[in-house]
Length: 309
Image (cartoon, rainbow, N blue to C red; front, side, top):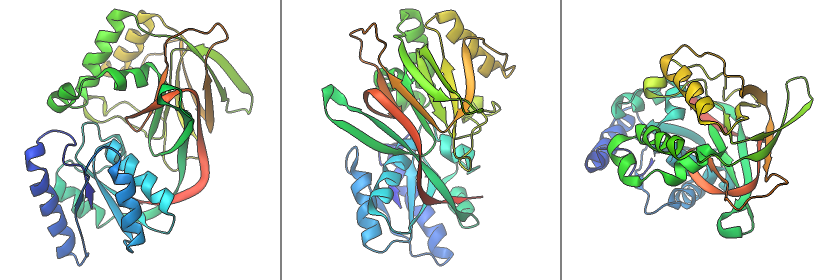
Protein backbone atom coordinates (compact mmCIF):
# COMPACT_ATOMS: atom_id res chain seq x y z
CA UNK A 1 0.00 0.00 0.00
CA UNK A 2 1.88 3.03 -1.33
CA UNK A 3 0.36 6.23 0.02
CA UNK A 4 1.06 9.91 -0.38
CA UNK A 5 1.06 11.66 3.03
CA UNK A 6 0.42 14.99 1.28
CA UNK A 7 -2.38 13.88 -1.05
CA UNK A 8 -5.79 15.55 -0.78
CA UNK A 9 -7.16 17.20 2.32
CA UNK A 10 -7.14 16.07 5.99
CA UNK A 11 -3.48 15.12 5.66
CA UNK A 12 -3.05 14.96 9.43
CA UNK A 13 -5.29 11.86 9.43
CA UNK A 14 -3.57 10.14 6.52
CA UNK A 15 -1.50 7.59 8.49
CA UNK A 16 -4.55 6.67 10.59
CA UNK A 17 -6.70 6.18 7.48
CA UNK A 18 -4.09 3.95 5.86
CA UNK A 19 -3.68 1.90 9.05
CA UNK A 20 -7.43 1.24 9.20
CA UNK A 21 -7.55 0.23 5.54
CA UNK A 22 -4.60 -2.12 6.08
CA UNK A 23 -6.42 -3.75 9.00
CA UNK A 24 -9.44 -4.38 6.76
CA UNK A 25 -7.19 -6.21 4.30
CA UNK A 26 -5.33 -8.14 7.02
CA UNK A 27 -8.59 -9.25 8.59
CA UNK A 28 -9.43 -10.83 5.24
CA UNK A 29 -6.14 -12.73 5.18
CA UNK A 30 -4.14 -10.32 3.02
CA UNK A 31 -0.51 -9.70 3.99
CA UNK A 32 -0.58 -5.90 3.73
CA UNK A 33 2.38 -3.55 4.17
CA UNK A 34 2.20 0.25 4.09
CA UNK A 35 4.78 2.53 2.50
CA UNK A 36 4.61 6.36 2.51
CA UNK A 37 6.06 8.30 -0.42
CA UNK A 38 9.01 10.51 0.43
CA UNK A 39 8.94 13.12 -2.35
CA UNK A 40 7.41 13.85 -5.73
CA UNK A 41 8.11 10.90 -8.01
CA UNK A 42 9.25 8.52 -5.25
CA UNK A 43 6.27 6.19 -5.76
CA UNK A 44 7.73 5.16 -9.13
CA UNK A 45 10.85 3.73 -7.53
CA UNK A 46 8.94 2.38 -4.52
CA UNK A 47 6.58 0.49 -6.83
CA UNK A 48 9.55 -1.05 -8.64
CA UNK A 49 11.06 -2.10 -5.32
CA UNK A 50 7.77 -3.65 -4.19
CA UNK A 51 7.52 -5.72 -7.38
CA UNK A 52 11.16 -6.83 -7.00
CA UNK A 53 10.39 -7.86 -3.40
CA UNK A 54 7.58 -10.13 -4.59
CA UNK A 55 4.42 -8.06 -4.00
CA UNK A 56 1.58 -9.40 -6.14
CA UNK A 57 -0.62 -6.32 -5.69
CA UNK A 58 0.27 -2.63 -5.46
CA UNK A 59 -2.45 -0.43 -3.97
CA UNK A 60 -2.01 3.25 -4.78
CA UNK A 61 -3.51 5.22 -1.89
CA UNK A 62 -3.95 8.82 -3.00
CA UNK A 63 -5.17 10.79 -5.97
CA UNK A 64 -4.73 10.21 -9.69
CA UNK A 65 -1.16 11.51 -9.46
CA UNK A 66 -0.20 8.81 -6.95
CA UNK A 67 -1.87 6.16 -9.13
CA UNK A 68 0.06 7.54 -12.10
CA UNK A 69 3.40 7.11 -10.34
CA UNK A 70 2.61 3.61 -9.08
CA UNK A 71 1.49 2.57 -12.57
CA UNK A 72 4.74 3.86 -14.07
CA UNK A 73 6.79 1.96 -11.49
CA UNK A 74 4.78 -1.19 -12.12
CA UNK A 75 5.24 -0.92 -15.91
CA UNK A 76 8.97 -0.27 -15.59
CA UNK A 77 9.37 -3.22 -13.24
CA UNK A 78 7.53 -5.67 -15.50
CA UNK A 79 6.16 -8.78 -13.86
CA UNK A 80 2.54 -9.66 -13.11
CA UNK A 81 1.65 -7.44 -10.14
CA UNK A 82 -1.90 -6.06 -10.06
CA UNK A 83 -2.75 -2.39 -9.47
CA UNK A 84 -5.45 -1.35 -6.98
CA UNK A 85 -6.67 2.07 -5.83
CA UNK A 86 -7.83 3.62 -2.56
CA UNK A 87 -8.99 7.22 -3.23
CA UNK A 88 -7.38 9.88 -1.04
CA UNK A 89 -6.66 12.67 -3.51
CA UNK A 90 -8.15 15.92 -4.71
CA UNK A 91 -9.79 14.63 -7.89
CA UNK A 92 -9.95 10.81 -7.85
CA UNK A 93 -11.13 10.47 -11.45
CA UNK A 94 -10.03 6.83 -11.70
CA UNK A 95 -11.56 5.86 -8.36
CA UNK A 96 -14.85 7.49 -9.38
CA UNK A 97 -14.86 5.54 -12.63
CA UNK A 98 -14.15 2.33 -10.70
CA UNK A 99 -17.12 3.11 -8.39
CA UNK A 100 -14.92 3.04 -5.28
CA UNK A 101 -16.32 4.62 -2.08
CA UNK A 102 -14.63 7.72 -0.70
CA UNK A 103 -14.39 6.18 2.76
CA UNK A 104 -10.98 4.51 3.11
CA UNK A 105 -12.14 1.37 4.91
CA UNK A 106 -15.13 0.96 2.59
CA UNK A 107 -12.80 1.26 -0.41
CA UNK A 108 -10.53 -1.45 1.04
CA UNK A 109 -13.55 -3.75 1.53
CA UNK A 110 -14.64 -3.07 -2.05
CA UNK A 111 -11.20 -3.99 -3.39
CA UNK A 112 -11.54 -7.40 -1.73
CA UNK A 113 -14.49 -8.09 -4.06
CA UNK A 114 -12.86 -6.67 -7.22
CA UNK A 115 -11.12 -8.83 -9.82
CA UNK A 116 -7.91 -8.16 -11.80
CA UNK A 117 -8.57 -7.30 -15.43
CA UNK A 118 -6.10 -6.79 -18.27
CA UNK A 119 -6.03 -3.18 -19.50
CA UNK A 120 -3.86 -1.69 -22.23
CA UNK A 121 -1.81 1.16 -20.85
CA UNK A 122 -1.91 4.63 -22.29
CA UNK A 123 1.32 6.50 -22.97
CA UNK A 124 2.44 10.08 -23.52
CA UNK A 125 5.70 11.12 -25.19
CA UNK A 126 6.76 14.74 -24.72
CA UNK A 127 9.69 17.13 -24.58
CA UNK A 128 11.03 17.39 -21.06
CA UNK A 129 10.88 20.77 -19.31
CA UNK A 130 13.31 23.56 -20.26
CA UNK A 131 14.07 22.12 -23.68
CA UNK A 132 15.38 18.79 -22.42
CA UNK A 133 15.33 15.45 -24.21
CA UNK A 134 12.15 13.60 -25.13
CA UNK A 135 10.58 11.61 -22.32
CA UNK A 136 7.70 9.17 -21.89
CA UNK A 137 5.19 8.30 -19.19
CA UNK A 138 2.46 5.69 -18.96
CA UNK A 139 -1.07 7.08 -18.61
CA UNK A 140 -4.03 5.52 -16.85
CA UNK A 141 -7.10 7.79 -17.22
CA UNK A 142 -6.34 11.19 -18.72
CA UNK A 143 -3.80 13.30 -20.57
CA UNK A 144 -4.10 16.90 -21.65
CA UNK A 145 -2.26 19.43 -23.80
CA UNK A 146 -2.69 23.19 -23.81
CA UNK A 147 -5.08 25.04 -21.52
CA UNK A 148 -5.74 21.91 -19.43
CA UNK A 149 -2.05 21.48 -18.58
CA UNK A 150 -1.63 25.22 -18.11
CA UNK A 151 -4.37 24.91 -15.50
CA UNK A 152 -2.28 22.31 -13.64
CA UNK A 153 0.81 24.48 -14.03
CA UNK A 154 -0.82 27.60 -12.59
CA UNK A 155 -3.02 26.17 -9.80
CA UNK A 156 -1.43 26.96 -6.45
CA UNK A 157 -0.73 24.04 -4.12
CA UNK A 158 -2.32 25.92 -1.21
CA UNK A 159 -5.58 26.22 -3.18
CA UNK A 160 -5.59 22.49 -3.93
CA UNK A 161 -5.08 21.73 -0.26
CA UNK A 162 -8.03 23.90 0.72
CA UNK A 163 -10.49 23.36 -2.11
CA UNK A 164 -9.48 20.05 -3.70
CA UNK A 165 -10.49 19.63 -7.36
CA UNK A 166 -12.52 22.86 -7.21
CA UNK A 167 -9.23 24.79 -7.03
CA UNK A 168 -8.92 24.01 -10.74
CA UNK A 169 -12.25 25.70 -11.40
CA UNK A 170 -11.01 28.84 -9.61
CA UNK A 171 -7.85 28.89 -11.72
CA UNK A 172 -9.92 28.21 -14.84
CA UNK A 173 -11.97 31.33 -14.13
CA UNK A 174 -8.78 33.35 -13.72
CA UNK A 175 -7.39 32.06 -17.03
CA UNK A 176 -10.66 32.84 -18.81
CA UNK A 177 -10.62 36.46 -17.67
CA UNK A 178 -6.95 36.70 -18.66
CA UNK A 179 -7.75 35.34 -22.17
CA UNK A 180 -4.67 33.09 -22.04
CA UNK A 181 -5.30 30.33 -24.61
CA UNK A 182 -2.36 29.94 -27.05
CA UNK A 183 -3.03 27.76 -30.10
CA UNK A 184 -1.16 24.73 -31.44
CA UNK A 185 -1.79 22.01 -34.03
CA UNK A 186 -3.44 18.67 -33.22
CA UNK A 187 -3.78 15.62 -35.45
CA UNK A 188 -5.88 12.55 -34.64
CA UNK A 189 -7.59 9.57 -36.24
CA UNK A 190 -11.31 9.78 -36.89
CA UNK A 191 -13.49 6.74 -36.24
CA UNK A 192 -13.70 6.06 -40.00
CA UNK A 193 -9.89 5.85 -40.15
CA UNK A 194 -9.31 9.26 -41.73
CA UNK A 195 -6.74 11.62 -40.23
CA UNK A 196 -7.99 14.95 -38.95
CA UNK A 197 -5.98 18.08 -38.23
CA UNK A 198 -6.89 21.42 -36.65
CA UNK A 199 -5.52 24.43 -34.80
CA UNK A 200 -6.59 24.03 -31.18
CA UNK A 201 -6.13 25.55 -27.71
CA UNK A 202 -6.81 22.37 -25.75
CA UNK A 203 -6.92 18.62 -26.24
CA UNK A 204 -8.05 16.29 -23.47
CA UNK A 205 -7.68 12.53 -23.93
CA UNK A 206 -9.82 10.63 -21.42
CA UNK A 207 -10.33 6.94 -20.61
CA UNK A 208 -13.09 7.43 -18.04
CA UNK A 209 -16.84 7.81 -18.34
CA UNK A 210 -17.54 10.37 -15.65
CA UNK A 211 -16.00 13.14 -13.60
CA UNK A 212 -15.98 13.08 -9.77
CA UNK A 213 -17.82 15.50 -7.49
CA UNK A 214 -20.41 17.91 -8.86
CA UNK A 215 -19.74 16.76 -12.45
CA UNK A 216 -20.47 13.12 -11.62
CA UNK A 217 -23.60 13.06 -13.78
CA UNK A 218 -21.65 14.12 -16.89
CA UNK A 219 -21.02 11.18 -19.23
CA UNK A 220 -17.71 11.45 -21.10
CA UNK A 221 -17.94 8.32 -23.25
CA UNK A 222 -14.48 6.96 -22.45
CA UNK A 223 -13.62 3.62 -20.87
CA UNK A 224 -10.53 1.81 -19.66
CA UNK A 225 -11.65 -1.34 -21.47
CA UNK A 226 -11.66 0.53 -24.81
CA UNK A 227 -8.43 0.69 -26.79
CA UNK A 228 -8.80 4.37 -27.54
CA UNK A 229 -9.34 7.78 -25.92
CA UNK A 230 -12.36 10.01 -25.75
CA UNK A 231 -10.99 13.29 -27.10
CA UNK A 232 -12.29 16.75 -26.26
CA UNK A 233 -10.81 19.04 -28.92
CA UNK A 234 -11.19 22.79 -28.45
CA UNK A 235 -10.76 24.35 -31.89
CA UNK A 236 -11.02 27.85 -30.51
CA UNK A 237 -9.26 30.37 -28.30
CA UNK A 238 -12.42 32.39 -27.66
CA UNK A 239 -13.46 32.74 -24.03
CA UNK A 240 -17.19 32.49 -24.82
CA UNK A 241 -16.75 29.01 -26.33
CA UNK A 242 -14.87 27.72 -23.28
CA UNK A 243 -17.53 29.19 -21.01
CA UNK A 244 -20.36 27.70 -23.06
CA UNK A 245 -18.84 24.23 -22.96
CA UNK A 246 -17.99 24.44 -19.27
CA UNK A 247 -21.50 25.52 -18.28
CA UNK A 248 -23.02 22.83 -20.49
CA UNK A 249 -21.19 20.28 -18.29
CA UNK A 250 -21.92 21.94 -14.95
CA UNK A 251 -25.61 22.40 -15.74
CA UNK A 252 -26.02 18.81 -16.89
CA UNK A 253 -27.75 19.94 -20.08
CA UNK A 254 -24.70 18.99 -22.21
CA UNK A 255 -25.59 21.17 -25.17
CA UNK A 256 -23.36 21.02 -28.22
CA UNK A 257 -20.65 23.65 -28.72
CA UNK A 258 -19.69 23.69 -32.40
CA UNK A 259 -16.09 24.71 -31.72
CA UNK A 260 -15.55 21.74 -29.37
CA UNK A 261 -15.31 18.41 -31.16
CA UNK A 262 -15.78 15.10 -29.36
CA UNK A 263 -14.09 12.10 -30.93
CA UNK A 264 -12.69 8.63 -30.27
CA UNK A 265 -9.11 8.01 -31.38
CA UNK A 266 -6.26 5.66 -30.38
CA UNK A 267 -3.75 8.50 -30.70
CA UNK A 268 -3.34 12.26 -30.94
CA UNK A 269 -0.25 14.28 -31.90
CA UNK A 270 0.28 17.89 -30.86
CA UNK A 271 2.90 20.18 -32.43
CA UNK A 272 3.56 23.93 -32.57
CA UNK A 273 1.82 25.91 -35.29
CA UNK A 274 3.92 26.85 -38.31
CA UNK A 275 3.45 30.50 -37.36
CA UNK A 276 5.42 29.79 -34.19
CA UNK A 277 5.03 31.78 -31.00
CA UNK A 278 7.12 32.01 -27.86
CA UNK A 279 4.49 30.76 -25.40
CA UNK A 280 5.40 27.34 -23.90
CA UNK A 281 2.51 24.89 -24.29
CA UNK A 282 2.48 22.27 -21.54
CA UNK A 283 1.16 18.73 -21.23
CA UNK A 284 -0.07 16.68 -18.27
CA UNK A 285 -0.99 13.09 -17.52
CA UNK A 286 -3.32 12.00 -14.72
CA UNK A 287 -3.06 15.49 -13.22
CA UNK A 288 0.76 15.49 -13.20
CA UNK A 289 2.46 18.29 -15.14
CA UNK A 290 5.12 16.80 -17.42
CA UNK A 291 6.67 18.87 -20.20
CA UNK A 292 5.94 20.66 -23.45
CA UNK A 293 5.34 20.23 -27.19
CA UNK A 294 5.78 18.16 -29.28
CA UNK A 295 3.48 15.61 -27.60
CA UNK A 296 2.11 12.26 -28.76
CA UNK A 297 -0.57 10.40 -26.77
CA UNK A 298 -1.11 6.75 -27.68
CA UNK A 299 -2.47 3.40 -26.46
CA UNK A 300 0.27 0.84 -25.77
CA UNK A 301 0.24 -2.80 -26.81
CA UNK A 302 1.50 -3.64 -23.30
CA UNK A 303 -1.11 -4.36 -20.66
CA UNK A 304 -1.30 -4.23 -16.89
CA UNK A 305 -3.78 -5.76 -14.44
CA UNK A 306 -6.19 -3.45 -12.63
CA UNK A 307 -8.60 -4.37 -9.81
CA UNK A 308 -12.03 -3.57 -11.25
CA UNK A 309 -15.64 -4.24 -10.18
